[in-house]
Amino acid sequence: MATKTKSAPKSKKNIGIRPLGDRILVQRIEAEAKTAGGILLPESAKEKPKEGTIISLGDGRLLDNGDRAEWNVKAGDRVLFTSYGGTEVKYNGEEYLIMEERDILGVIEG
Image (cartoon, rainbow, N blue to C red; front, side, top):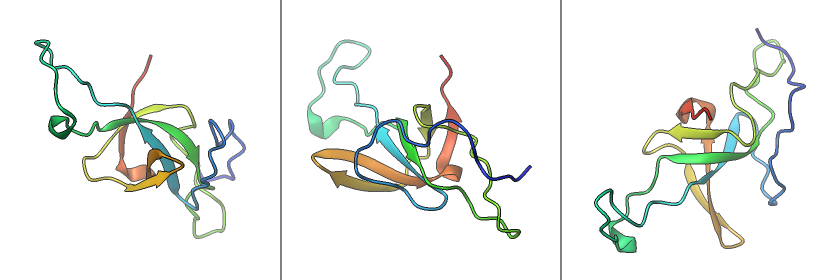
């Protein structure tokens, strides 16, 4: 079903970056500093998490008929994404990812 999106706010907070088209702005959730066994990890040994929070959404994918596809996610959703998904962007000292919706594997419920 393709309609123009009139849903929840497309931005969780205004940070000064507005994704275009079918792009999504995501902020990674911080990597754990400790292993399950309690060992502290140095910054260089931490694996970048594949989990983040959606900050804002673009207008959506443009369909052949001129309408915009509806989003399956919304600002504020906690999501899992592919390892190499998105482009890393640093803005005002914060790190973000700009990715397409297809790079998102799922929404974490609860």
